[in-house]
Length: 167
Image (cartoon, rainbow, N blue to C red):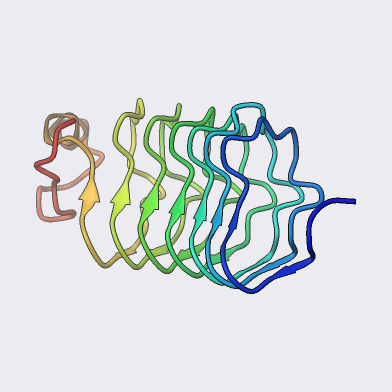
């Protein structure tokens, strides 16, 4: 039961009140868009063969268990109920967005992001686990970053590029 097993282009199941990913395609040739499924709390049956970006913003996710370890494009898990990035992707070949969650640190997040790393609007108390390689901007409000510098989380302002974007 479900949809096709292989899709040569993009696969969108956004805004559908999904409860699970059971039955979605196993191989997707471009991006996989599953945004705005507020009842979706698990990625346990997430397709492993996605050859592009993966979008899970504004779902009800509590965990990243099941997501591929390498994302061949952007990965957006913003606007969920995540309190940890454990079991998430290790490499993101595009932008990584985990804003608007309940993250207090970045442990378990990707070690490499080939784009922007956006973790704004989280109650971070530590930047532990921040990717070692970020090819573009690390987005976190400047005043919040300065608080972490004051706590010894960062040795000085040169350790990371501080975003001037404050939203």
